[in-house]
Length: 122
Image 1 (tube, helix red, strand yellow):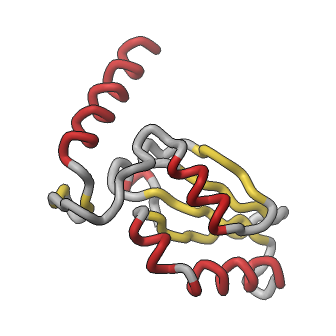
Image 2 (image 1 turned 180 degrees about the vertical axis):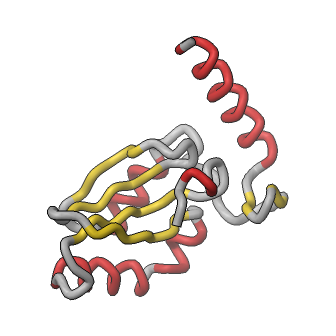
Image 3 (image 1 turned 90 degrees about the vertical axis):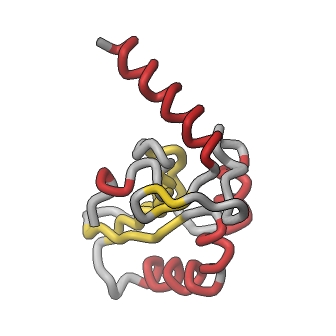
């Protein structure tokens, strides 16, 4: 799944694992599935990448890695999300933006910030 395609619509937990049979991966998947409603309220989707080492990355709406974890702790992930600039974005007042939902005002603010950052890097 392309994370770039879902920029500004979803956050991701990217689980990098050597194998789908890896116990750490299976444990992470079980924890995620047990708390899936809480993750979805915060627009977090889990994706898996096969790599040499195990790690879990929290990727923000902007597509950047925000935090890296060795073990999935939902309370820590939710606290980290809450500390993000758009951490308060949850499933409440919805608007539809090409298949995703966000607070409209928060979306416009973040889009403006991102555009300004892009311009300043040129």
